[in-house]
Image 1 (cartoon, rainbow, N blue to C red):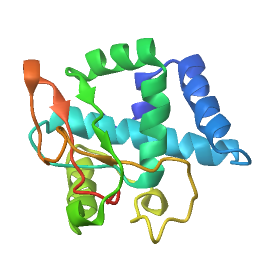
Image 2: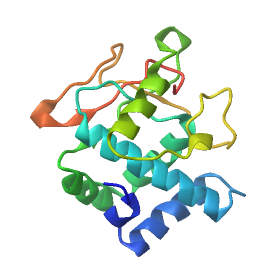
Image 3: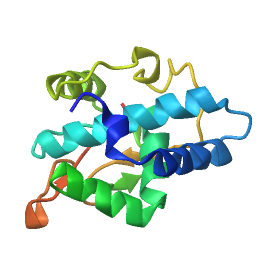
Length: 162
């Protein structure tokens, strides 16, 4: 899927964008739209490759968080993608950090057929956009790797959001 905005109605997309803006006062609408689009690309890739350990950048994670907050929309979005994409947050921990996690994720999102907005896919120390999101992703406390209860997709960062 190349036009991920088609996964949501214009009203639903606008609602998610508004959530990103609400969580990041002063953010321009165009930036919030870019973040949501990249989160949709990430989710599509996560659904296509459920056993690959991937993680969004901290900036893209902000869009994923906004999508999740719209629970009814998120459930329907996951159904359209063919599987539920779980979010397993943990506080950032440098001991879990895997320096190649973001590179692997970018490659998987591209393999899923998407062109990335590279400004939004940087590590936390190089981020060009400041966002409220501040978690890492792992499927179980103290562990890292995908689990698939009921063939669900889940993703892991190894810490630090990258």
